Image 1 (cartoon, helix red, strand yellow):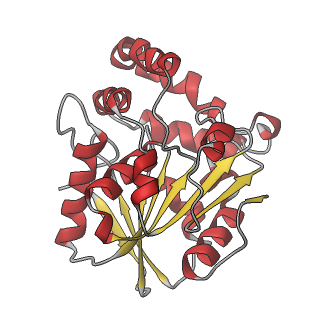
Image 2 (cartoon, rainbow, N blue to C red):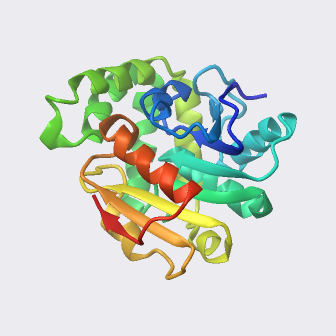
Length: 260
């Protein structure tokens, strides 16, 4: 079973899924700002953190099934699900397979859109360097995920993100990249899901096409989106603002579609 940590004893269960080359440690800053009304369940996805590599290709569906095993083991009923980046892709696969389990789905600097052909080719070209020179791959990529206008302020956070990335098993990372190449468009999941859907996006996100994601969101009353003045890593760049939105939006309500 996947490695996980359970923190707090709030009445609302909030499941946190990290992104590519990350692990449950990424939530530390955000966690300190989240409401005590949440019980947090932080899960290391396959091939990341302390969770084992399970296959040559970690599809989003395979990872969603493994997340379900953790939640069944913990006898978690309905819950709020939040996924960062790749964790958002896994969350969408989970929502497609187990919609009745969700009180809400939060795409946290992630997208429901499939990779375009250019992005797929970039991922495929990365296979070899991930396998043979993973450290170089991580060092080249991680800084670009942060707001370029605040690199000096975020230097410590960038270093933390890099340490976590370098601790990730390169073959686990490779299995997940192959899974991301295979993933499909999930707009239909948002269209069919009755649970609350929350989208937090970054104005300076170099990994996710924020404008495209927001533009193509289904026009439904249960969907709200927020664009923040940050890059791809709101949990490190704007943890207090992100937590305030999550606390208020999942536990109460806020006006629709704000730019912060």
